[in-house]
Length: 142
Ligand code: CMP
View 1 (cartoon, rainbow, N blue to C red):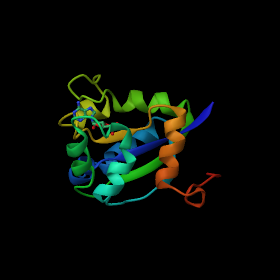
View 2: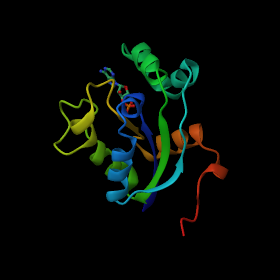
View 3: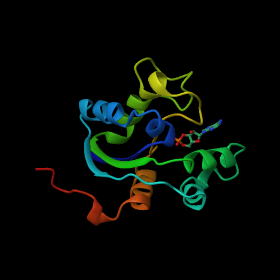
């Protein structure tokens, strides 16, 4: 089934000038970019986006990191996009991520882990709507 997932290139990815390399990898893996923008989240927005983690001990650090610089939310489309994307990025902790995954190759820590990805169809739908209106998504790639 063709699915959509929300990817975010996090502030560490942008600071390291790795936007192009990561997008190149997504394209090589067969993902179509159907929405993309560069934004700097304020802490309220980052906190709202990650509200599911609000009781976790790392919540404050996560919000301050995600609002520390620009990031690149994007909507990726592909057969089985949600699971396949998670395989390409690897485990949350780069120390536990498989060889060749984006987090293994480029991430410094669990928190500064380069990329975000939706973890299930219902969260993907919520997260995509969080960043993109339907007019901002390209329905027919041609
Ligand atoms: P992400 O996929 O963006 O979703 C939630 C984020 O919280 C996750 O990636 C990590 O960056 C961060 N995170 C999850 N667990 C921890 C942890 N134990 N310590 C610090 N940050 C974490």
